[in-house]
Image 1 (cartoon, chains in turn yellow, orange, brown, cyan):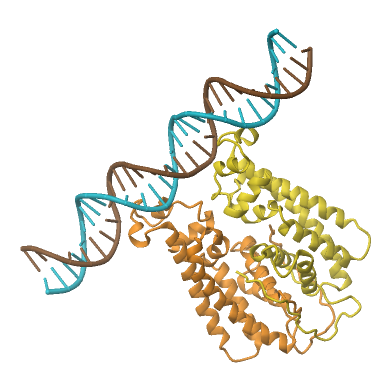
Image 2 (image 1 turned 60 degrees about the vertical axis):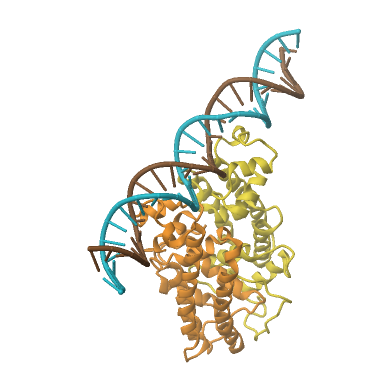
Amino acid sequence: MRESARLFRERGYEGTSVRDIAAATGLQSGSWVYHFGTKQEILRAVMEEGLRRALERIEAIAVRRGGPRARFEALVHAHLETLLAPGQDFIPVLLYDWRSLDAGARPAIVALQARYEAVWDRVLGELRRSGEWAAPTAIDRLLLFGALNWIAHWYRPGGPLGIPALARQAVAFFLRQTSRRRSGPERPVRRVPRRPRSR
Amino acid sequence: MRESARLFRERGYEGTSVRDIAAATGLQSGSWVYHFGTKQEILRAVMEEGLRRALERIEAIAVRRGGPRARFEALVHAHLETLLAPGQDFIPVLLYDWRSLDAGARPAIVALQARYEAVWDRVLGELRRSGEWAAPTAIDRLLLFGALNWIAHWYRPGGPLGIPALARQAVAFFLRQTSRRRSGPERPVRRVPRRPRSR
DNA sequence: GCTTTATTCAAGCAAGCGCTTGGTCTAGAC
DNA sequence: GTCTAGACCAAGCGCTTGCTTGAATAAAGC
């Protein structure tokens, strides 16, 4: 599953052959069938396993004590780790190969996603009520997820910004500076050495 | 090219066969070769053409008179139209099938993308200087692009929010309310009838 | 009327695809 | 010592893939 996720992420589901997977795991070209049956089942297993692990992490964060801002910061950091850290290919596959997943396998994944979103919605609700959320709009969670998930498109390990720095920048982007200094003056743009290229 | 873009968007580049394209355009299975030579060339042409059209639109916006906020709003609206409007499959293909594009064809596309980003950077710079940009961070353009581009993942035509409404919500998300009332009190979350489901 | 040019057809080739088949090997249970 | 279950091999089947081939058709140029 780990090797499959890596290959799916790099080449896409349709761009990866079962022979590629067999070769990457040191098996003969047909031996994988014993474990999964169909190629689709590999994809489903990768997505479900990735989502299950991610859920476990953020549900633990959601029950922490402390202010909503701290929980939000932890959520963002966990989300980016799940998305970008080395060896974490499961969630990118979920995000970028969704259209390759058979319709019959989708409802189970969608249900897990709903649980994932529910955790965020709870924390975002607290942030809105406390006035720390910068711009309440009807689709702010979707815009938030977009901004975060898109990082997987341009992030390269070893770049100028690591995952903790990215998480800090993202949090600063979404939240007012602090809840005490809610409407303070402008802060100058802080530059990083070299900006990564977007797409 | 139009049919190819539609198929690539729906099924992905690897998930679309040249026979699918031929059938969609009423040709026999090998006749497309006369026009493009290779399947890769179709992909390249789709991406380049889409980017060229998008550039034409936003470069016209960038030279408009008026405040930076008006230009920013127009940029967001144009970007979303390019991404979501019916028949606009070229840019989604560029965004979501990039890894299928041969390395040799990439530099030309990257050069066009750089021009696209330069237009945005100019307007964003004006917004930062005027104090209207809500949260200046080192990667704000990338986060902005992510939030916008991700909409293509969950947007369905005919949903509760049309493209102009989405553009308004996005602008509200990124900018302070108005330049006059820069640090006003909270506004309540405005709800839409039914929220679309994210992924 | 003849030639050229642009476009498409009909057939098919070589390679790669997901998956199947029948069999082998190994470790543990009895 | 025999049996069973788990894991894998080696070969290959039927089908699809991107692309090629040589010929046909139609319009335009001279």
